[in-house]
Length: 295
Image 1 (cartoon, rainbow, N blue to C red):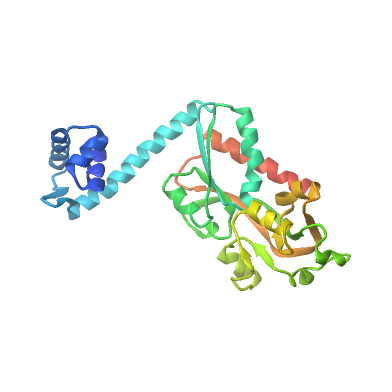
Image 2: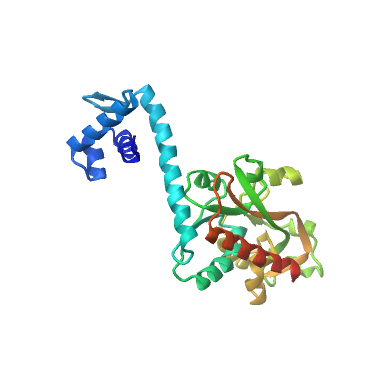
């Protein structure tokens, strides 16, 4: 049994047609037919039913195809890790990150990594945090950086925790709430609240209703623009708004601290060994994250 024949079977299962599958595989149709026949003979089972309407996997064929996907994925993982182990400079790193706080946290780290290794290929995928675990399981990404309240409950994932980050109310300069010398959290609640969709565990921790924000948006940059141009108040960690606060575009209300804190982490598959480039990324991210607590 050869992996290339398993790839042929998977292509045929996807397209349900010898002609279409052969075209995508850059084979002639007779060559693909012989390959499938050889695979079926080697395994002693019929993998496909041939019908006028198309090709359909048999019951035993579905079992074969399921294992074929796993075998091919294992080989791809092996080739991927060997390549990264041999040469960090020309390696590849794919990180999934939510569009809110974690994206702001890792941007300087990716920049430093690319400065150190200009030929390194980095794929930074911004996705809703709910989609990231499946991307990790499908090997679309090597790791994800997000709030860990949900993912630390998943048995197949391994979480490397970062620091806890306090959360404060944020508003525009000249906001009516600033008439108070030291605005409290309760006083900020008189205005529209803007923030991201949040993990279920966070709501349970603070016993808050799931519709805690009037305006829900998972983009930190959009939320900051909204806050700058309205009386809406958002809640962010200091590192997320440091640039805007320094520029006088936003005000961080130290007297209006919200609970709970952000709990970010680096999540990887337990079954996948980290590459050299991943190990360096984790080290740099931890160093960058630690600077906020030291400040």
